[in-house]
Length: 139
Image 1 (cartoon, rainbow, N blue to C red):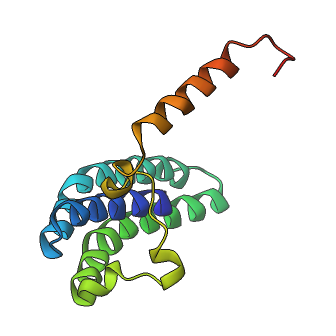
Image 2: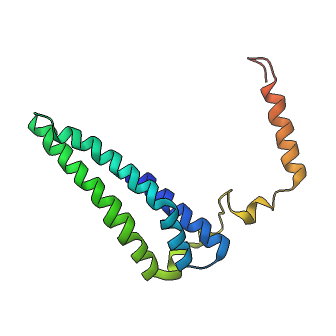
Image 3: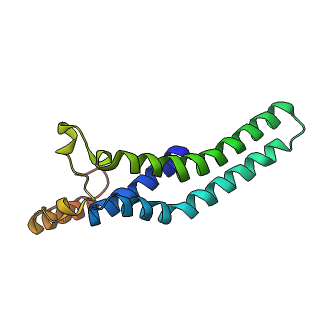
């Protein structure tokens, strides 16, 4: 859960930063958009781990209690406090990338979506539809 929700949080922050170009409002927007989701997921996982903690088997009690506490700390302290604070402290360095990576742009960035020629898109769509209608075993 930890990595998935961190990627989700940082994706919202980066999307807002790409849209506005402003640092602090992007962090606030990302936390505001993902905070309830991360909190709800953490509470669900902690509740499930609490069920293990109520078991009569000692290793399950230890496992359940430890994971429930870890998930709650991760959702509150890490996602709610440390990530926004560190992003605010590091400022524009959050958006730095090495030269070999800064040349790569994800497909979902607005600048690359408009650089694809419409003829290329229609040719790709035609080629995909030709392959999808072919009989099995033929290409």
